[in-house]
Structures are given as structure tokens and as C-alpha cells.
Image: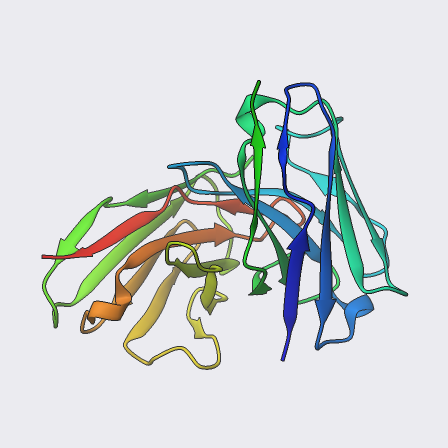
Length: 120
Length: 108
């Protein structure tokens, strides 16, 4: 069974940093893109970032470009999202999601999500 | 950037009703369109991809259609367990993967 588990959520002050992790199991990890999607309180889903199966091709939504960095370790079946210069509007539940191919979507497996709160 | 617009929201219907949700893309995306179901405190679930292909395990009362810029998700007979928010997603311009604003489906 495919499984994705997020960790690293927390309360952080504006301007602070946080690192999220996504641990995957149940599939050949290196063959699939992994994505981060977030949902702010009372809002819809927003795609945040993706990384190709080979660890190349990192991409970001304009709202996080230059502040967030995605990376993956195919030997450990993990993906990380380094979040710097956090803003109040980054407050959201963050989901990691597996793509159906090496790059792109759609997303056929999702984690349960983890809450990031940015507040002073 | 591609913009995805969903309607209506919210949507209130009775058990057994046929329900249709519309998603419009700001530019043509062929059939690179997916639909997701999202219930509170749960992971989103892929229902349909390639505009009309049912994901494995999804009940047959769900169906999708459309191509280009206009797409629909239909629930042929609304069930209580279908109460959720539904999102469309364009994935033609990977890796930019845009979601629609969501349609909240409620039972009357």
C-alpha cells in the first residue's frame, strides 16, 4: 500500500524557517514526482512545489519562489521542503502528494497533511 | 498562467439527485484535467484523470467529461458520503499544476 507521511510541522514566527519532510513507502520512489500542496484556513488547495523522480526539475509556485526549496533523497525515500522567510500567509496544512509519473500530475496518493502556523 | 474556475459553490442537493460541477480553464488544456474529492481532516482523493478516466476504486456514480476549456464532474445519484469539496486540476503545463477554487457539495 502506498503511504506518504509528513513531519516537521510547527508554530513559527514571521521571518522564521521550517523544514518539512515527507517519508514514502509502498512504491518505487525514484520513478515518481513528489509534490507539496497546501490548504490555508478556509481556502482551497494550492500547489506549492514539485520535484521530478530523479531529483531534478524542482519547480515552485510564484507565491513561494525564492523562499522555499524542495529536495529529495531517493536512498531514503524522502522529500524535504525547506521553508525560509515565512509569512503569515504561509499558514496552512501542507500535504505531500505522489504524481503518477516522473514529472507532473495528477496526484494519486496523498499524505494526511501537517499544520504550519506562522504567527507572532 | 492557466486559471481554473469552478461553479457553482456551494452546491446543495438531495440524496439521489444528479449533481454536476463545472470547471473552466482560461486556455485550452486538451484533456489534462483531474478531479479530486476532499473531506475535512482527510487526504484529498483522486477521482478522475484525463478528464474522463475513473481512478481505480472510485464508485461508478462519478463521471467526468469535457476537453479544451470546459469540463464537468457528474455524480449520477448523490449519496450522504459524497459530502465533500471537489476540486479540478489542470496538469497540461507540468510542473505548474493549477487547482480550481473548489465546489462544496452539501445535502439538502
